[in-house]
Length: 79
Image 1: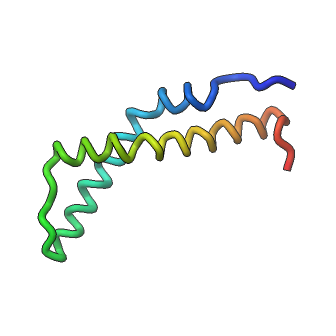
Image 2: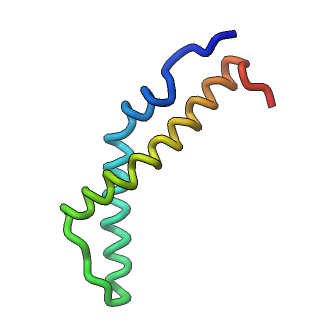
């Protein structure tokens, strides 16, 4: 059987804005928690930049998982 549907790259590109946004929010909230320890809170601009950097590998890993689930559903990957 051939693989059908989107490739991992296409899934990553489609989900990247959501992954980067989620990572940016998490980075900002983490800086708020670390402020309890005396670490300064980072700005929203830096949160967005760090979210874009962290969001790419996180989204790619999630897209690999989704592609695996698609393969299992199609019966291509039997475990």
